[in-house]
Amino acid sequence: MRLKIFLQFFVCIFVLFLPGNAIAWGEKGHRIVGAVALSHLDSTALREVNEILESAPDSTIGTACNWPDEVRETEQWEWSASMHYVNIPRHADHYDRSRDCKDGLCVTSAIIKYANELSRNDLDLEQRWQAFAWLCHLVGDLHQPLHTGYKDDLGGNTLQVEYLGQPYNLHQFWDRAVIQAYLENDAQWVKPLSQSAWSKPPGKWNPAETISWTDESHALVAASSYPPGRVIHQDFADQSWKLICEQWQKASIRLAQILNATLGEGKIVLD
Image: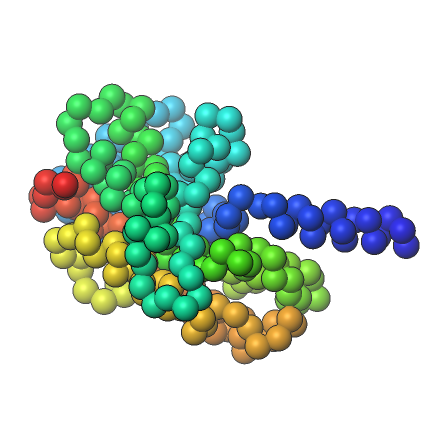
């Protein structure tokens, strides 16, 4: 009994000191977002992305799009932890860079930063690969609503819930529990998702849109991300899975927009 109490206490303390938000979408989600985005690239951008992936040994769209999570706990990249999310106050409807991202190290600013880097012609191969990996990953992160959530509960990390008889924090529920329950084979998922675009083919990207995407994701936090009780029932899980699918579609199309703008035929000059 004492051991059980100790372990529960340890888990709670560990969660309380997590650096911001946890990993979004897990390996499968980030791989799906990247793979579907490839199906919406123009021929020039697709050729550029393939060259980027081929520049690193054993590199695939999955390894690239998940790489930022793999390195975030290393000494070299520990500074990057806050780029995976942005905290917006509960009372606020809109992202405010001067309030929410003063140092520029949040997901919204980081997307623009790495899009800007990817558009440059003077990067070496490693820098170019890393810029692509960050861009793919962060666009996915931005579309996980709790990555635009509240500082006081660390994006749902301190809120304990139960789903299918197992304990999770709310962030874990969104990142992996729902996906594990509903997604049997991500390879079977990519093709129908790529063929049923969320709205329309990607148009020309304006960097200012990233702020609108942040506001859109943040609006889902209060509206759809918190269950009515600590035990998550099937109706909420069904609703959550539907929302995840919609967010993956949006992230894929929007990632393609950025890649077409920075690498493809719709290339633009970023500030």
